[in-house]
Image 1 (spheres, rainbow, N blue to C red):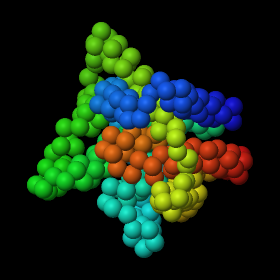
Image 2 (image 1 turned 180 degrees about the horizontal axis):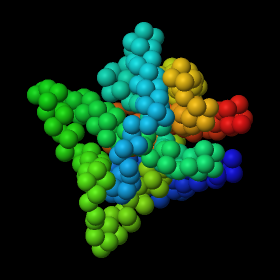
Image 3 (image 1 turned 180 degrees about the vertical axis):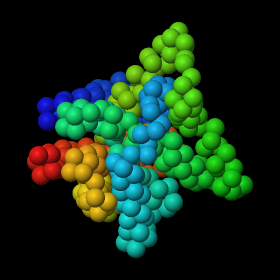
Length: 306
């Protein structure tokens, strides 16, 4: 658990730095959006290209990834149903809430969990691949469609296809698929830019906390609680049930359940802030799931890890 605690401490420390920067007046108001934009259009694509070019596309077909991906879709569907029945929201908010319910932090928290609890970092790489290559294009296409473009979903899909996040993910995936080697002098600046992505997103997230509390009345708390509950409790339960029903080995059940319990990825907040849709809902969900997932992961390790 020490590695997991270190991962949480790292995330919270950078968020705190962003909050203190805003509190000290170093960053004022919407100036934080500069960080979001640079992260979204420059640093995050560099990071995703770097990660995906060294991945193994074949591992996407593993039973663990099948279970975690199915779990994500099921809880996302549950959020959409809840939104339709109990707290009606617009398309962008519903989409981002559903994404919060199933899009896991498979990088800066997933890696320490995989290394120190599951025993192998390779467990989270395939899920990262699925989220970036399959889930993210769909989410961004929907967000593009909410920008008021009257020419329909085809135009929105076209704009999403030219999004740097999608292009970088596809480029990295193709490099891995065909074994394309990138010269070191090309990769060095890409690696350096990619290393800045997560700190910028986390600092911007911390800045957004300045001047407002989480879960304030009138900020859509029902959607936040629904997404948080589905993420930290619903998704692990679904993953455990599916893995057990499929007759997977005990360790694979443990791995799938643990991965499903990871908190919502900060990337979702970056998407919300970039498109200026449902920022408060996503921010509060990321905040709550980051704290709530730790005891859940500990409980799963105690119950299934033996």
